Length: 280
Length: 319
Image (cartoon, rainbow over all chains, first blue to last red; front, side, top):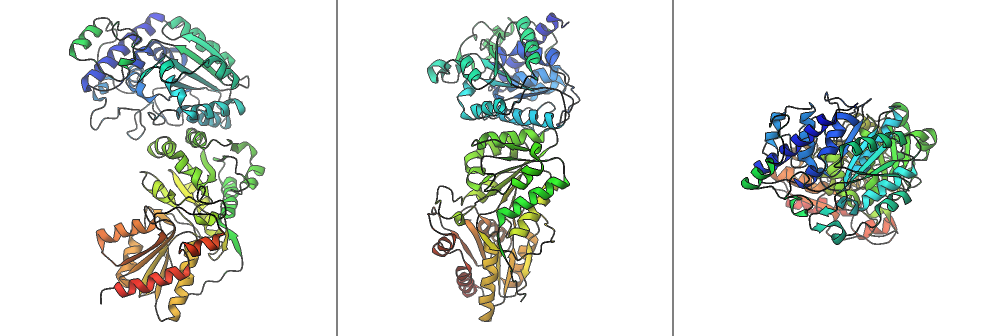
């Protein structure tokens, strides 16, 4: 039985970390990681079978790929908080000579990162390959991939979707951060995605939906997704989230996709988020 | 002067197919992917023997590059197969981020490179790939010259950890390197020693360079012919050593002059030993339909052009 309060406390701390990280360098993307705080907390503290003693091949472990690399601040926070590296290193985010690059990279050997991401649309293809390698190695563990909803405008995502279903990759769970916002505005205005549920279904995927900001739902749905694995089809979860979740003046606006808070905004934001695990 | 002879002509892509089968037998981690061109890439023997280690991805090259990157996570050594055009230009960002920057052990195997693809025309005649690939940090770039060398290179790259771009072609060309010759990445091969002019070539142009050497020999010119099969890392030592002897050089390749082998050598010489240099390649234009021989003639990528360039550069040589 997962302790919900523990996951909530991680999510709250993750939000504080993200805000402090992007504020410190006056750059970065706070909106999406704030919306994915519950999901990332649930993944690293409950769903994934993983070890912070990182090795690239990850044999016998679940693998997590972040295709929407601009969530980096949130990912770095949850990696540090789950023991992949010292939380103090979060203070180097986006600074010169850091392992915590603006977008995730492998070149500096940061534990937890298996492929660079940032240029959108590539992660699901990489996850396909990693899932195939697991099958070739008779490794029963699963491969997860988080994508942004705006990212689904990239054609390569649909190449990867077609491949996964066509080749029966049933050890793969994709999660779409469906916050409805992208840099230039609401996704429906920039380039409507249409009926996403029907699209994925017609591509041959098993489709689930959940509210990504409600921890119980996240845990239940991830559990359901795991049970659907091994049945010849890949699984996708359309995860509704609120961009900027947890900070009242940031919630639901695309304006916080790639803008850091100023000093005053940071203070206001942090006042709404409990420091649960100690700031870095 | 050593006389090179050949008893048969074969396509370098068939050397790749044979090498892939062989390396598949030697190393169970080798897997292969193709984007709907298995026949053209001569991958069918591998597929027949190792069906579970082959992945047909359809006409979706971007996805193929990402899948290849993912397969390395778990210890596989993926070989991707498609035309040079679709192996590079179409998927540059995927290679850049998911393979080169991520230091993935992917072998990008590219056929039908250059003008000798022939009648299909400029849409498919990739002449910029060496440049695109050599610019990427972490990438090794190899352009073998005949069937045997392409086979040997295909086998050798499995033992090199890191991304590799292996470029070969469509037409049948003379097979003149020994079948049992080991391929050493980054080690240029002196095919003929000479003292008057150095000729550096790669791929299909190596045979043409040897033919040019024969012509020049008749005129009393001693040409040193060097097969620079690895564009990156460049064998700087062998190149500088040859130049120290000859003091002038010609480069020859089936590629744009911008970004090619000649440009790499020009930079090396400019920085270390400024030397008169003539470059043979395609000069900032696209190709067109025609037979391979017609195209190589029209674009000046043959023995006659190389010999002419050698005569010219000899006149520029400091007295």
